[in-house]
Length: 388
Image (tube, rainbow, N blue to C red):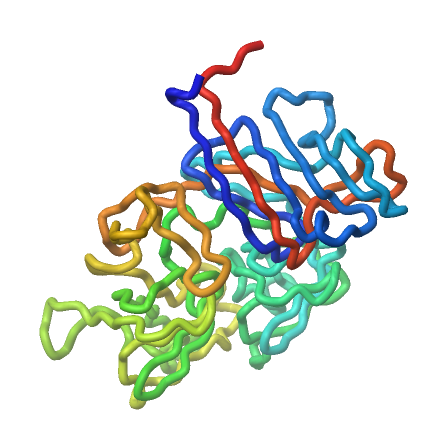
């Protein structure tokens, strides 16, 4: 029966050893082909895999696979663990396991040391604690906000967009108690979301860097919230500096907010707005660590009516085009169909995950489902009739 079944297909170039594919439904059957491996055989790599939600043998996300073993010979019909699985994110943030932070550099940008972190570029994480000496020294200024990883140095090191070189930051070492990190599994429930600002370059136009993917488009209308927090204990200039960007108050037109427009997008963390900030106060993240309890962060958010929240249906376009994110690279569709064009769209995620792989029968070494730069084709189905 196919009256109410749903079908989708697509392809992507992998940017790591796992991938999330967003769909407007939660599939019950998924099939993938690793074109790169089919074209050029590689040891302990998957060429073809398929998953059914009724496949239950007690292992972790069991998936049926065809693979090349460590002798580059094809092995048919094995069961792979940590393979393909369906997911539905819900309406609240969900997190992966908590990992201990071994150390972090007090540098620009900050590099974290986490043993076998398993993260890749584009993963979003949240830090907690980050005190080297409880409440008096460390990098707690970075706690409890989302960071999207910009560089993965190796299996134990990764980098985020934050300047930790200031005098109020102390490097972390020797696995300080309470300093942890965890992955945000499906971070963008709405796109674009409210993002924390990590750097501002002043000038005739203003360049903004955010801690996570900003997901803005050229033409996006944006507003700023820069807390006017005085340093402690002295009442010195505002801690974050560039409060002139704030949407309120508007000194020229009382009651009317000050908005900016995105004129260019540099990458997933960086964009430029049409605000002349040449005479503004310099942005500052060198916040005293004693300010951390109750600290409010500088933010940028989407506003207005005609921005990223929908796509125009025109000749040659898909019948039901869904808004896509993020802005600059690796654009993937949200779960929505055609949307009213507006400031943001609901992006509560569902679809399927391709895991990083672990072990399969008849193979002596660990097997990787996909690898960086692999070209992967996929089909996904949700059947309207599923018999026992």
